[in-house]
Length: 288
Image (cartoon, rainbow, N blue to C red; front, top):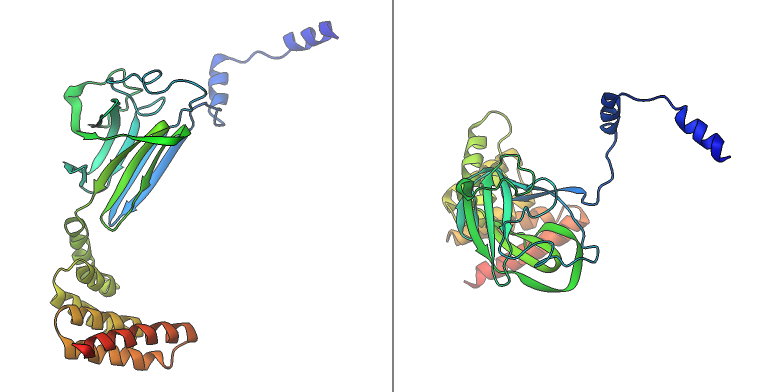
């Protein structure tokens, strides 16, 4: 049996080196550090992170596999990639939109987070501080429960910020990414309002209202939205909120009463919701 197996083995046709290389690209090869892509939207800003996820596998990570006070690729294989579709700030430091490679310098008490314009680096072996675009510091957090695979993600996502977290073994590093919502969203909305086709009147009105911008414009935009959707109770209710914030109490009462009347003939769930909302708003307005 042993001799037969040997004969079968040597009777297999030999493949040219090029054929082997071609075959290796037809399916993803298993790896101990799989590739991951993370997407997060904050306001009108898209943030994307691409990295490779090594595992602990019983090793000493920080101070061992990853030395203290030396530049780390923040993952395995290629340097970790991060992109921002608009300008942002990283722990308060301005960062232009674009594609970057993310490096860190782990420290026992403080880490340095580095962004370089993307140069398709493998690891950090060719890292040159002369290419740094941004450097910020961040304070690590000790974890009670270890994280086996390096994990980069987003937490505490709000309308204008998110926390980028880098966690591995018993260490987590939070880095706050903030967005200037007015500077990034308002121009897009104004362009859309001037373009052909359906106008985003409602969304623009709510943006101006929620960010305490031009309330006269917010009211005008909501009225334009209502022209296209006459009697829409949700829009009428929000018009009342805008007018209330802008100090027009009679106008707010009129809009809330109209929304309340429309709610009476709406489907049960809408009737219940907007009866409750408008009743509370009218009580507040009439008490002033």
